[in-house]
Image (cartoon, rainbow, N blue to C red; front, side, top):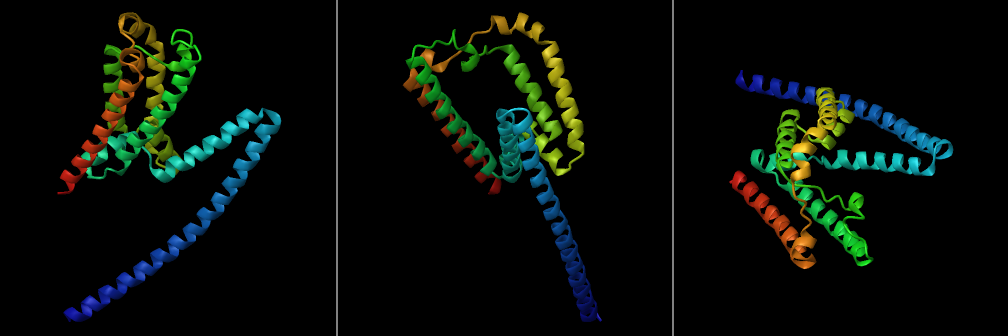
Length: 237
């Protein structure tokens, strides 16, 4: 009797598995069709923007779509990068973020050095250099943003990505994200008066020199990379 029950259970499991595969296959066909329609819509909208608005706007549209696809396929999210090594032992996303920061830093350093070599100054090129004051407002903003990311289970890019995938709860997170940004803009004069205007600006190449600044910056990134690896290995053990 026990063998008969086991055989019947196995047969039922195989039937259920075949049904799920058929349903998955049909859903996959629907998704492919929707994907083709969306691709055609993206191309048409890009052409309309190029013809009726400007080539620059059309280019921004195409790059925005490509950026969204890359974001979704890579599952790129700063919240997960900080959270995963501690909760799941996965370090791939955290390492990817560190490598991305390193690559961006190298590019910005090259641009800054070239501009300074041509005679530009931080005072005359402040809008480009983005050397902003560091103070109490930085710590408060970072803390609030970190708490918000944990509660929403995603950063700004992760939230937008999940909304595109159909996670309706992330729409609530996006609404509060927008509300927070608007409140921040409204209260900016307050923070600018008590903290931003009284805080120092620190530009590492100007403070330490280019070579020591780059060594310090990339050394800290390397230390973070190794620390993430240690934490992930400790979790797996």
